[in-house]
Amino acid sequence: MSEKSIFIPLQKTGVNANVLKTVAVLAMFIDHASHLVTEFGTSERWIAHLIGRLAAPLIFFLVAEGHHYTSDKKKYIMRLFIFALISHVPYNLYFGFSQFRGTSVIWTIMLGVVALSVITSDKLNVFIKTVLIGATLLMAMPANWHYIGVLWIIAFGLYRDNLKLKVIMFTLIALVFYILPGLQDIGMYATYRFGVLMTIPFFILYNRKPGVRNPFTKWVFYWFYPIHLIVLFGIRALMNL
Image (tube, rainbow, N blue to C red; front, side, top):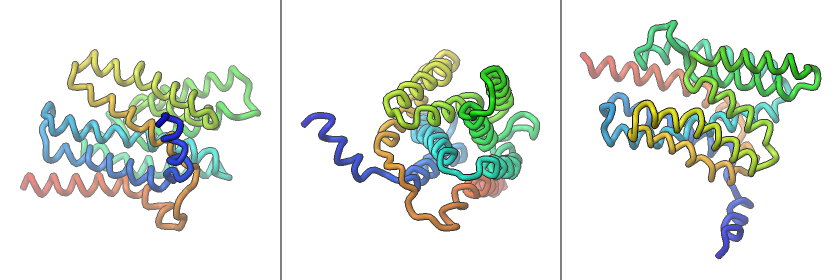
């Protein structure tokens, strides 16, 4: 059976946005919870990190989709900004950072949406676009996934209708800015970073449908991020009593 004949029926049914969000949330929780029950450098932590690599690319992919479908991009950006503020303290508390050392991936997501809005704008010239996109990349540096997330969101948005280019750009960004630097810095343990490439089948199978839409499905994924960090921080506190 050819590769084409395998994927055609799968693409006809596909997976909707809610499925991708659920996979991303579960992968994120496994990754973050592993900090409570495993030690760095162990095979258990490596496996959790491998699974966790599904989360960020799927989230960035869905954010680019949200940018395409939203009727009010400014409101979308403001909503992300508010949740970036809400998530800042829980993120630093759980991961043990000072409040001024870093911030959560929500800040990266917000800047990614800004960058995608800039690059797709018909009202800005090339120079202004270059300056503004450069600014978003710099502003993302303190955040989780920093400029990698911004670049992925841009790529997912720009090549939304070209699956091949979308996958190629995603893979190039992953290799150049994430996987290879990790292997250079921490050696073979960083092979879990190849896990980001496990998201490619999800991109292929995505059917561009939102799934069930109601207030719960709209807001649960926003609130999950800060709440799960607070819960994990509370569990750690109880474990240390």
